[in-house]
Image 1 (cartoon, rainbow, N blue to C red):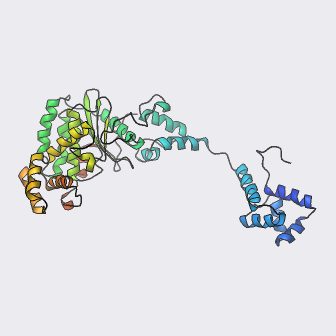
Image 2: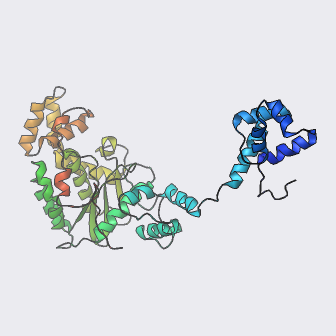
Image 3: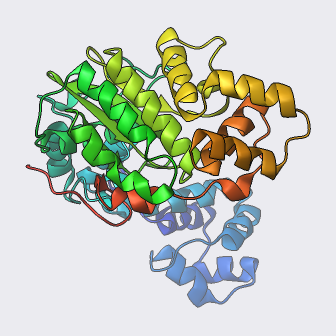
Length: 375
Protein backbone atom coordinates (compact mmCIF):
# COMPACT_ATOMS: atom_id res chain seq x y z
CA UNK A 1 0.00 0.00 0.00
CA UNK A 2 1.06 3.59 -0.56
CA UNK A 3 0.78 5.70 2.59
CA UNK A 4 2.03 9.03 1.25
CA UNK A 5 -0.53 10.24 -1.29
CA UNK A 6 1.81 13.00 -2.38
CA UNK A 7 4.21 10.31 -3.61
CA UNK A 8 1.97 8.56 -6.12
CA UNK A 9 3.48 5.40 -7.64
CA UNK A 10 3.30 4.63 -11.35
CA UNK A 11 0.26 2.69 -12.60
CA UNK A 12 2.43 -0.42 -12.93
CA UNK A 13 2.43 -0.67 -9.12
CA UNK A 14 -1.30 -1.37 -9.12
CA UNK A 15 -1.06 -3.74 -12.09
CA UNK A 16 1.60 -5.73 -10.25
CA UNK A 17 -0.71 -6.01 -7.21
CA UNK A 18 -3.54 -7.19 -9.45
CA UNK A 19 -1.30 -9.82 -11.04
CA UNK A 20 -0.32 -11.10 -7.61
CA UNK A 21 -3.97 -11.29 -6.53
CA UNK A 22 -4.79 -13.34 -9.61
CA UNK A 23 -1.59 -15.37 -9.41
CA UNK A 24 -0.72 -14.26 -12.93
CA UNK A 25 2.69 -13.64 -14.38
CA UNK A 26 3.56 -10.78 -16.67
CA UNK A 27 3.71 -13.33 -19.47
CA UNK A 28 0.14 -14.39 -18.66
CA UNK A 29 -1.07 -10.80 -18.89
CA UNK A 30 0.82 -10.31 -22.14
CA UNK A 31 -0.93 -13.38 -23.54
CA UNK A 32 -4.35 -12.07 -22.47
CA UNK A 33 -3.68 -8.65 -23.94
CA UNK A 34 -2.12 -10.00 -27.10
CA UNK A 35 1.03 -7.90 -26.74
CA UNK A 36 4.74 -8.74 -26.29
CA UNK A 37 5.79 -9.56 -22.74
CA UNK A 38 8.30 -6.70 -22.90
CA UNK A 39 5.44 -4.23 -23.34
CA UNK A 40 3.84 -5.41 -20.10
CA UNK A 41 7.20 -5.35 -18.32
CA UNK A 42 7.81 -1.73 -19.33
CA UNK A 43 4.42 -0.68 -17.85
CA UNK A 44 4.78 -2.72 -14.65
CA UNK A 45 8.28 -1.34 -14.04
CA UNK A 46 7.08 2.24 -14.57
CA UNK A 47 9.22 2.82 -17.63
CA UNK A 48 6.25 3.32 -19.92
CA UNK A 49 2.92 5.01 -19.36
CA UNK A 50 -0.54 3.67 -20.10
CA UNK A 51 -1.98 4.90 -23.37
CA UNK A 52 -5.70 5.24 -23.97
CA UNK A 53 -5.68 2.03 -26.05
CA UNK A 54 -3.85 0.14 -23.31
CA UNK A 55 -6.26 1.51 -20.66
CA UNK A 56 -9.15 -0.02 -22.57
CA UNK A 57 -7.28 -3.30 -23.03
CA UNK A 58 -6.44 -3.53 -19.32
CA UNK A 59 -10.06 -2.71 -18.49
CA UNK A 60 -11.13 -5.77 -20.46
CA UNK A 61 -8.46 -7.96 -18.85
CA UNK A 62 -9.26 -6.98 -15.25
CA UNK A 63 -12.98 -6.22 -15.67
CA UNK A 64 -12.77 -2.61 -14.44
CA UNK A 65 -13.58 0.71 -16.16
CA UNK A 66 -10.94 2.01 -18.56
CA UNK A 67 -11.11 5.35 -16.68
CA UNK A 68 -9.52 3.63 -13.67
CA UNK A 69 -6.23 3.09 -15.51
CA UNK A 70 -6.44 6.42 -17.35
CA UNK A 71 -6.87 8.23 -14.04
CA UNK A 72 -3.98 6.30 -12.48
CA UNK A 73 -1.74 7.47 -15.32
CA UNK A 74 -2.97 11.06 -15.08
CA UNK A 75 -2.47 11.18 -11.30
CA UNK A 76 1.05 9.79 -11.63
CA UNK A 77 2.01 12.28 -14.36
CA UNK A 78 0.69 15.18 -12.28
CA UNK A 79 2.67 13.98 -9.27
CA UNK A 80 5.83 13.95 -11.38
CA UNK A 81 5.24 17.41 -12.86
CA UNK A 82 7.21 20.30 -11.47
CA UNK A 83 5.49 22.71 -9.13
CA UNK A 84 4.40 25.80 -11.08
CA UNK A 85 6.39 28.98 -10.84
CA UNK A 86 4.68 31.19 -8.22
CA UNK A 87 4.97 34.00 -10.77
CA UNK A 88 2.34 32.28 -12.92
CA UNK A 89 -0.54 32.73 -10.47
CA UNK A 90 0.53 36.25 -9.53
CA UNK A 91 0.88 37.33 -13.15
CA UNK A 92 -2.50 35.74 -13.91
CA UNK A 93 -4.11 37.85 -11.18
CA UNK A 94 -2.51 40.99 -12.59
CA UNK A 95 -3.55 40.20 -16.16
CA UNK A 96 -7.10 39.50 -14.97
CA UNK A 97 -7.36 43.05 -13.61
CA UNK A 98 -5.16 45.11 -15.91
CA UNK A 99 -4.05 44.93 -19.56
CA UNK A 100 -0.51 44.05 -18.44
CA UNK A 101 0.61 42.42 -21.68
CA UNK A 102 -0.50 45.40 -23.76
CA UNK A 103 1.07 47.83 -21.29
CA UNK A 104 4.37 45.97 -21.62
CA UNK A 105 4.02 45.95 -25.39
CA UNK A 106 3.47 49.71 -25.39
CA UNK A 107 6.51 50.32 -23.20
CA UNK A 108 4.51 51.55 -20.21
CA UNK A 109 5.75 48.65 -18.10
CA UNK A 110 8.91 46.54 -18.26
CA UNK A 111 8.45 42.78 -18.43
CA UNK A 112 9.76 41.31 -15.19
CA UNK A 113 8.92 38.98 -12.34
CA UNK A 114 5.47 39.20 -10.79
CA UNK A 115 6.87 41.07 -7.78
CA UNK A 116 8.46 43.75 -9.93
CA UNK A 117 5.39 43.96 -12.16
CA UNK A 118 3.23 44.55 -9.12
CA UNK A 119 5.55 47.32 -7.99
CA UNK A 120 5.42 48.92 -11.45
CA UNK A 121 1.63 48.76 -11.55
CA UNK A 122 1.37 50.38 -8.12
CA UNK A 123 3.64 53.18 -9.33
CA UNK A 124 1.85 53.49 -12.68
CA UNK A 125 -1.53 53.98 -11.03
CA UNK A 126 -0.09 56.26 -8.35
CA UNK A 127 -1.24 53.99 -5.52
CA UNK A 128 0.28 53.01 -2.18
CA UNK A 129 -0.45 49.30 -2.58
CA UNK A 130 -1.89 46.87 -5.09
CA UNK A 131 -5.18 46.83 -3.18
CA UNK A 132 -5.52 50.56 -3.70
CA UNK A 133 -4.98 50.46 -7.44
CA UNK A 134 -8.22 51.70 -9.04
CA UNK A 135 -9.44 49.20 -11.58
CA UNK A 136 -13.21 49.38 -11.24
CA UNK A 137 -15.83 52.12 -11.48
CA UNK A 138 -15.58 55.38 -9.55
CA UNK A 139 -11.90 55.94 -10.38
CA UNK A 140 -13.05 57.93 -13.38
CA UNK A 141 -16.33 59.05 -14.83
CA UNK A 142 -17.51 57.80 -18.22
CA UNK A 143 -20.29 60.22 -18.92
CA UNK A 144 -21.44 59.08 -22.34
CA UNK A 145 -22.97 55.83 -21.09
CA UNK A 146 -23.60 53.99 -17.87
CA UNK A 147 -20.97 51.26 -18.13
CA UNK A 148 -18.17 50.86 -15.66
CA UNK A 149 -14.78 52.17 -16.65
CA UNK A 150 -12.78 49.29 -18.08
CA UNK A 151 -9.26 48.50 -16.83
CA UNK A 152 -7.88 49.24 -20.32
CA UNK A 153 -9.55 52.66 -20.23
CA UNK A 154 -8.08 53.45 -16.83
CA UNK A 155 -4.63 52.37 -17.97
CA UNK A 156 -4.95 54.68 -20.99
CA UNK A 157 -6.13 57.52 -18.77
CA UNK A 158 -3.27 57.16 -16.31
CA UNK A 159 -0.77 57.05 -19.18
CA UNK A 160 -2.20 60.31 -20.48
CA UNK A 161 -1.89 61.74 -16.97
CA UNK A 162 1.76 60.62 -16.71
CA UNK A 163 2.61 62.38 -19.93
CA UNK A 164 0.64 65.53 -19.14
CA UNK A 165 2.49 65.94 -15.84
CA UNK A 166 5.75 66.27 -17.77
CA UNK A 167 4.49 69.12 -19.93
CA UNK A 168 5.35 72.76 -19.24
CA UNK A 169 3.00 75.41 -20.59
CA UNK A 170 3.89 79.03 -21.40
CA UNK A 171 0.83 80.51 -19.69
CA UNK A 172 -1.72 79.51 -17.03
CA UNK A 173 -5.19 78.48 -18.10
CA UNK A 174 -8.09 80.88 -18.25
CA UNK A 175 -11.57 80.44 -19.66
CA UNK A 176 -11.14 83.60 -21.71
CA UNK A 177 -7.95 82.34 -23.33
CA UNK A 178 -9.61 79.08 -24.35
CA UNK A 179 -12.57 80.91 -25.85
CA UNK A 180 -10.13 82.96 -27.90
CA UNK A 181 -8.30 79.78 -28.87
CA UNK A 182 -11.54 78.34 -30.26
CA UNK A 183 -11.66 81.19 -32.76
CA UNK A 184 -8.14 80.33 -33.87
CA UNK A 185 -8.98 76.64 -34.11
CA UNK A 186 -11.98 77.42 -36.31
CA UNK A 187 -9.61 78.88 -38.90
CA UNK A 188 -7.67 75.61 -39.06
CA UNK A 189 -10.63 73.51 -40.17
CA UNK A 190 -10.28 74.20 -43.87
CA UNK A 191 -7.24 71.98 -44.48
CA UNK A 192 -6.30 68.67 -42.78
CA UNK A 193 -2.64 69.71 -42.55
CA UNK A 194 -3.59 72.68 -40.40
CA UNK A 195 -4.45 70.28 -37.59
CA UNK A 196 -0.75 70.27 -36.72
CA UNK A 197 -1.21 73.70 -35.13
CA UNK A 198 -3.79 72.48 -32.60
CA UNK A 199 -1.33 71.57 -29.79
CA UNK A 200 0.34 74.98 -29.98
CA UNK A 201 -2.96 76.89 -29.98
CA UNK A 202 -4.17 74.98 -26.92
CA UNK A 203 -0.84 75.37 -25.12
CA UNK A 204 -1.04 79.12 -25.60
CA UNK A 205 -4.43 78.96 -23.87
CA UNK A 206 -2.99 77.04 -20.93
CA UNK A 207 -4.44 73.68 -21.96
CA UNK A 208 -2.24 70.57 -22.05
CA UNK A 209 -2.94 68.43 -25.11
CA UNK A 210 -1.71 64.85 -25.33
CA UNK A 211 -2.35 62.02 -27.75
CA UNK A 212 -2.23 58.42 -26.58
CA UNK A 213 -2.98 55.55 -28.91
CA UNK A 214 -5.90 53.56 -27.58
CA UNK A 215 -5.58 50.07 -26.14
CA UNK A 216 -7.53 47.11 -27.53
CA UNK A 217 -11.10 47.01 -26.14
CA UNK A 218 -10.75 50.50 -24.62
CA UNK A 219 -12.58 52.30 -27.46
CA UNK A 220 -11.59 55.65 -26.00
CA UNK A 221 -11.89 58.78 -28.11
CA UNK A 222 -10.96 61.43 -25.60
CA UNK A 223 -10.74 62.48 -21.99
CA UNK A 224 -10.79 65.61 -19.87
CA UNK A 225 -9.12 65.95 -16.50
CA UNK A 226 -7.27 68.52 -14.43
CA UNK A 227 -3.86 68.69 -12.83
CA UNK A 228 -4.67 71.14 -10.06
CA UNK A 229 -5.67 74.28 -11.98
CA UNK A 230 -4.36 73.08 -15.33
CA UNK A 231 -6.80 71.30 -17.68
CA UNK A 232 -5.74 68.40 -19.86
CA UNK A 233 -7.33 67.23 -23.09
CA UNK A 234 -6.29 63.74 -24.14
CA UNK A 235 -7.26 62.11 -27.41
CA UNK A 236 -6.66 58.70 -28.94
CA UNK A 237 -7.30 59.50 -32.63
CA UNK A 238 -8.54 55.93 -33.00
CA UNK A 239 -10.81 57.12 -35.80
CA UNK A 240 -8.36 58.71 -38.19
CA UNK A 241 -10.95 60.98 -39.81
CA UNK A 242 -11.08 64.74 -40.02
CA UNK A 243 -14.72 64.96 -38.92
CA UNK A 244 -14.18 62.80 -35.82
CA UNK A 245 -11.03 64.68 -34.87
CA UNK A 246 -12.66 68.09 -34.79
CA UNK A 247 -15.82 66.84 -33.10
CA UNK A 248 -13.95 65.08 -30.30
CA UNK A 249 -11.54 67.99 -29.85
CA UNK A 250 -14.33 70.55 -29.52
CA UNK A 251 -16.26 68.16 -27.28
CA UNK A 252 -13.34 68.00 -24.83
CA UNK A 253 -12.80 71.75 -25.04
CA UNK A 254 -16.38 72.24 -23.89
CA UNK A 255 -15.79 69.94 -20.94
CA UNK A 256 -12.87 72.18 -19.99
CA UNK A 257 -14.84 75.39 -20.42
CA UNK A 258 -17.62 74.06 -18.20
CA UNK A 259 -15.15 72.84 -15.58
CA UNK A 260 -16.09 69.22 -16.10
CA UNK A 261 -13.61 66.62 -14.91
CA UNK A 262 -12.21 68.64 -12.01
CA UNK A 263 -13.34 66.18 -9.35
CA UNK A 264 -13.23 62.96 -11.35
CA UNK A 265 -11.63 62.50 -14.73
CA UNK A 266 -14.04 62.20 -17.65
CA UNK A 267 -13.51 59.43 -20.18
CA UNK A 268 -15.33 59.68 -23.50
CA UNK A 269 -15.57 56.27 -25.15
CA UNK A 270 -17.34 55.40 -28.40
CA UNK A 271 -18.14 59.04 -29.03
CA UNK A 272 -20.15 58.41 -32.17
CA UNK A 273 -23.75 57.58 -33.04
CA UNK A 274 -26.11 57.93 -30.08
CA UNK A 275 -23.26 58.93 -27.78
CA UNK A 276 -22.63 61.97 -29.97
CA UNK A 277 -26.28 63.02 -30.04
CA UNK A 278 -27.39 66.53 -29.11
CA UNK A 279 -30.56 65.29 -27.44
CA UNK A 280 -31.76 62.09 -25.85
CA UNK A 281 -31.16 60.03 -22.76
CA UNK A 282 -27.49 60.72 -22.11
CA UNK A 283 -25.89 62.64 -19.22
CA UNK A 284 -26.31 66.41 -19.27
CA UNK A 285 -22.54 67.04 -19.35
CA UNK A 286 -22.35 65.03 -22.56
CA UNK A 287 -25.32 66.74 -24.15
CA UNK A 288 -23.70 70.10 -23.48
CA UNK A 289 -20.38 68.98 -24.97
CA UNK A 290 -22.05 67.31 -27.96
CA UNK A 291 -24.09 70.39 -28.78
CA UNK A 292 -21.03 72.61 -28.61
CA UNK A 293 -19.05 70.20 -30.80
CA UNK A 294 -21.80 69.86 -33.40
CA UNK A 295 -22.35 73.60 -33.54
CA UNK A 296 -18.61 74.17 -33.88
CA UNK A 297 -18.26 71.78 -36.82
CA UNK A 298 -21.41 72.95 -38.59
CA UNK A 299 -23.63 75.53 -36.87
CA UNK A 300 -26.90 73.84 -35.94
CA UNK A 301 -28.94 76.54 -37.67
CA UNK A 302 -26.95 76.00 -40.85
CA UNK A 303 -27.45 72.26 -40.66
CA UNK A 304 -31.19 72.64 -40.04
CA UNK A 305 -31.51 74.88 -43.09
CA UNK A 306 -29.35 72.59 -45.23
CA UNK A 307 -31.33 69.46 -44.37
CA UNK A 308 -34.64 71.24 -44.89
CA UNK A 309 -33.59 72.41 -48.36
CA UNK A 310 -31.71 69.36 -49.63
CA UNK A 311 -33.13 66.27 -47.95
CA UNK A 312 -33.67 63.55 -49.08
CA UNK A 313 -31.57 64.03 -52.22
CA UNK A 314 -28.23 65.30 -50.91
CA UNK A 315 -25.36 65.10 -53.40
CA UNK A 316 -21.60 65.42 -53.06
CA UNK A 317 -21.96 68.81 -54.73
CA UNK A 318 -24.38 69.94 -52.01
CA UNK A 319 -21.95 68.97 -49.24
CA UNK A 320 -19.07 70.67 -51.04
CA UNK A 321 -21.14 73.83 -51.32
CA UNK A 322 -21.98 73.75 -47.60
CA UNK A 323 -18.32 73.32 -46.71
CA UNK A 324 -17.26 76.13 -49.02
CA UNK A 325 -19.82 78.50 -47.53
CA UNK A 326 -18.68 77.67 -43.98
CA UNK A 327 -14.99 77.67 -44.95
CA UNK A 328 -14.35 74.20 -43.54
CA UNK A 329 -13.05 71.00 -45.06
CA UNK A 330 -15.76 68.99 -46.88
CA UNK A 331 -15.05 65.99 -44.65
CA UNK A 332 -16.20 67.94 -41.57
CA UNK A 333 -19.45 68.92 -43.24
CA UNK A 334 -19.91 65.37 -44.54
CA UNK A 335 -19.42 63.94 -41.07
CA UNK A 336 -22.13 66.13 -39.59
CA UNK A 337 -24.55 65.33 -42.41
CA UNK A 338 -23.92 61.62 -41.91
CA UNK A 339 -24.56 61.97 -38.18
CA UNK A 340 -27.69 64.05 -38.67
CA UNK A 341 -29.17 61.57 -41.15
CA UNK A 342 -27.80 58.52 -39.31
CA UNK A 343 -26.47 57.27 -42.64
CA UNK A 344 -22.83 56.42 -42.06
CA UNK A 345 -22.11 55.06 -45.51
CA UNK A 346 -22.52 58.45 -47.22
CA UNK A 347 -19.66 60.69 -48.41
CA UNK A 348 -16.93 58.38 -47.11
CA UNK A 349 -14.39 59.62 -49.66
CA UNK A 350 -14.46 63.09 -48.13
CA UNK A 351 -13.38 61.86 -44.68
CA UNK A 352 -9.63 62.34 -45.05
CA UNK A 353 -7.06 61.38 -42.43
CA UNK A 354 -5.46 63.82 -40.01
CA UNK A 355 -3.57 61.69 -37.47
CA UNK A 356 -0.18 62.07 -39.14
CA UNK A 357 -0.52 65.85 -39.15
CA UNK A 358 -1.62 66.01 -35.51
CA UNK A 359 1.05 63.77 -34.01
CA UNK A 360 3.77 65.53 -35.98
CA UNK A 361 3.54 68.38 -33.47
CA UNK A 362 1.72 66.87 -30.49
CA UNK A 363 3.13 64.98 -27.53
CA UNK A 364 2.01 61.59 -28.82
CA UNK A 365 2.46 58.14 -27.29
CA UNK A 366 1.85 55.13 -29.50
CA UNK A 367 2.20 53.99 -33.09
CA UNK A 368 5.70 52.75 -32.30
CA UNK A 369 6.73 55.74 -30.19
CA UNK A 370 6.97 55.82 -26.39
CA UNK A 371 7.00 59.18 -24.65
CA UNK A 372 9.68 59.20 -21.94
CA UNK A 373 8.35 60.04 -18.49
CA UNK A 374 9.96 60.33 -15.07
CA UNK A 375 9.90 57.01 -13.19
